Image 1 (cartoon, helix red, strand yellow):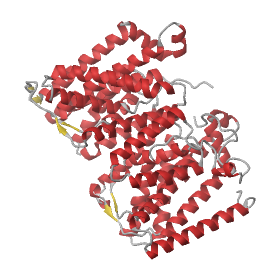
Image 2 (cartoon, chains in turn brown, blue):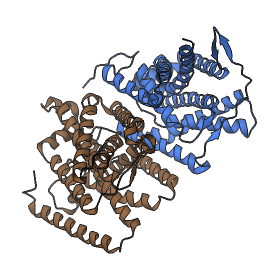
Image 3 (cartoon, chains in turn cyan, red):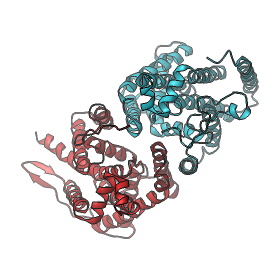
Image 4 (tube, one colour):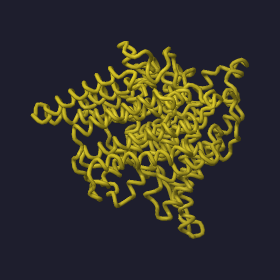
Length: 324
Length: 293
C-alpha cells in the first residue's frame, strides 16, 4: 500500500480525474459532445477496465489467458439478469457481475492454472467458448437472439469503476502479493523454490482479473442496449489481448494508453471492419517481430516523468523479454 | 441401432477431416513447439483454391485437390519463412501472439479481397452413389472423404518413416540442436514440415467443401480449434495420436448430436479438451515427460 508514501501524487491524480470527469459530464449534459464522441468515451472506459484486468493476469502474473471475453460475458449476463429480471438497482448489478465472474474465474482457474504456457492459453480459450455456447443455449437469457437491457451506464459510474479498477490493480501490484505474482512471471520454478505458493497467487490474480472483467461486463451490457452471445466470441478476447500486448506486457500505463488509442482508432475505422482487423493483425505481427515487449515494455509512464522511483509492476532494467 | 451406426459413419467422416487438419498441428508443434493458429486458415484457403479451380478453371475433383494441396504447401512455407522463422529463438508467448496475428490477417485479408459472402461448393463433380450395407445407408461423400483421408495418411506415414526428409523431421523434433550438429538442414526440415502439414490442411479444405457444400472466409476457425483439440486428445506431437484423436472427436460429436444436443456440439469439443488437459495432459498416446530445471 504505497498510497500514504506517495500521497501527494495520489491526491493530485485523483483531483485531476475528478476535474476531468466533471468537465466531461458538463459537456455531455450541455450537448457539446455529440453521441458519437460520448459512445467513444464509454467504450474507452470499458476497454480500460478490460485491459487493466487482463494486464494483471498476463502482464503481472505471466499467465497467458485468451478467454477473457468469457468473464466479460458472465458479467454482462448476470448484471442483465439482476436489473432486468430481478429489478434490482444498477450498483447491485455491478457487484453481482463482478462476484459471478470472480467465481467463474475461481472454478476455471483452480484446475487450469496447473497448466503452463500454450496449454493454459488453449484451455482458457476453450473456457471462453464454453461460456458463449452455454449462454447461447439458455432460453432464460434469450438464446441466440440475446437480451435487451436498459441503458443504465452513466458517466459517473463509469469513471468510478475505472478509477477503482486501476487503484486496486496498481496497489495489488505494489503489495507483497503483487511482488509474488511478478516473481511467478519472471521464473515460476525459482518462485516456488523461494517458498511462494505459486498456485495460490496465480489463482488470486486470475480471480481479481475476472472480477474486474465482470464489472466491465456489467457496464458493457447496460451501455449497448442488447447483449448477444456472438458479441463474446474469441474475437472479443483477441481484442482485449491486443490492448495488453501492444501496450506492453507488464505495463499498466501501457495497457491504458493502448486501450485509449486503439479504441479511438477502431471507432474511426468502424465503417471498415475488415480494414480494421487487417491493420490490427499486421500491427500484432510487426510488433512481435520488432518489439516483442510491447510499446512500453514493463516500464510505467511515471518512470518517464520521474515521479516514481522505480517502475511499477516491473523490474528496473527493461529486459528483452520478461514475460516468458 | 441403424440410426446409431449411421451417426457413427457421419462421425468417422467428420473425424477424418479433423484428423487431416490435426496432423498439421501436431507435426508443427512437435518440431517447433508452436501452436500454429493460422493452420485453420490454411484449411480455409485450401477450400477456396479448390472451389475456384473447380468453378473457374473447370477442373475435376482430383486435379482441384492436387492444385489446392500444392498451393497450400507453398502458402504454409511462406507463412513460416515470413512470420515464424524470425521468432525461432523468441519466447513461446511471442510466437503464439504472432500466430494469432497471422490467423487474423489471413481471415480478414480474405474478406478484404473477396468479401465475406459464402460460396456454395459445386456438387456432382464426382459421380457418387450411396452404398447400402445391412440397411445402413452410407453416402458417397462419406466414402470419398474416408478414402482420401486414409490414402493421405498412408502417404504421410510413408514420408515420415521411409524417406530421408521424414527421418530428418523425426530427428529435428527429437532434438533440434543435436540434429543441427549431425548436419541436418534444420530450416529446410521445418519448412518441409509446414509444407506437408499445410498440404494436408488444403486437402481437408476441399473435402470439407464437398461434404458441407458451403465455404466462407471465417470457416477455418472452429474446425481449426477442434482439430487442435483432436491433436491434444491424441497426444500433441504424435502423428498416430492426431489421427486417433481426430476420429474419436468426430465420433463423440456425432453421438452428442444424435443424443439431441446438436447445439451443444461445439461445447463438447472444448469440454473434452479441458478434461484431457486436467487428467492426462500428455494425451491418450503420449508419455509423461518430467520437467527439467
